[in-house]
Image 1 (cartoon, helix red, strand yellow):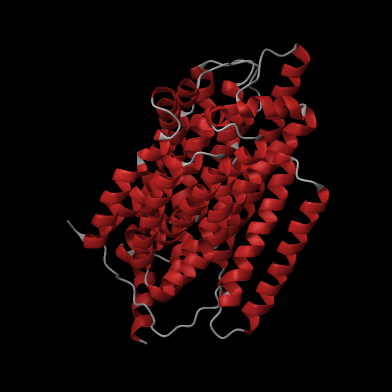
Image 2 (spheres, rainbow, N blue to C red; image 1 turned 180 degrees about the vertical axis):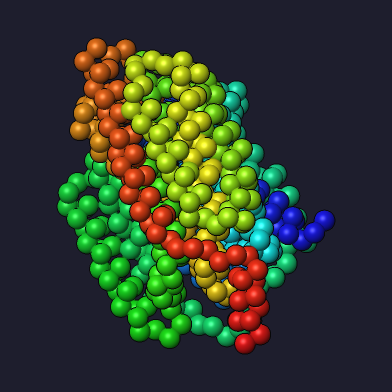
Length: 484
């Protein structure tokens, strides 16, 4: 087997596992709430703590990979993720599960931050879009299949089983990556670690995201929220000042002067803000007081979204290798936009075929957008900064998804009573009055209108990214840089 296919298959398993665990807990929350006798605050951290920690460390880990080796840190991440999964399955209290999820998220950070860089190193520029498309499919498939798998395992075996499955797969993948993956990139020896930059960036992202999401979702007091936001702002300013002065910065701010890099990352952030809460809101809706589906059936209703993305992701990547990213990625945003507009019309109940139509459009659009946009970002940077570039783009995806959850909760809470939202979140909702049902459905419509606006905004940077040079030009340019 050619090495590039070994790299693709191994990194696809890694991103599939890491993304699967971002959502697999969602379906199991009501059972965890009952078994561990925990509260809403703990449940929120069990759900979003994974995303918060992952988003906070991705850029750091991407830069460290450029210094110490992408494959080495990728394998280390697999080990951490597997051990963290074992700790999750053994947790007896809410705080124990939160701590185990944080440990697991650190491992996921190494997997997410290095997979795109390893693929970019292994595949020629003329095939990177296709490879990144397949890898991107695994991320979304993991997010949605986690709901189905989580529902089945929680119902038949118990919530602990949603973490058991990672252990044998993780052990196999660790051994496989150890013997099969190799360092293709030229790692520059002797680079120094930007300690202040790493700490200040991770702290800033974690503090700001935690402050906003905890205030909106869990009702954190204004004083603590202000403290977190103030701390995050201070650390972010410190980070910018540090990166401008240090000789070997953790984040080379000059990357954002590259038009394709900056435009692609802005588009990926806005796209993530649009789609991050899609699954969460639909899970609320499908298991809520009007549809009353069990976790398994709720997961089944969401399959058209992931199936359509899985179909179009590799095709879109293959086409982008030949025709560039600008118009293909922008077309994907438009297709998703139409799907979100259809979601704004759903009523108190809906059939599987009626929901499948907008979900197919949303999923197809995401599949068409993701691979070309990621390939455009990765192809725009020097080879020795691909780990950093990968970390930045996935960080923005995670930040967008986390903020999307907070925005969705904020919008829904302005229309639907918070107590009712909490009951739906915990799986304890009962039959509601016609007025409360109407407010709940209206709040869902508002969330998807907001998603539509984010996608319209994403079209601006997507269309302004400039022309991507043909593959041969890029290959010659890269070879000339290496020889020079």
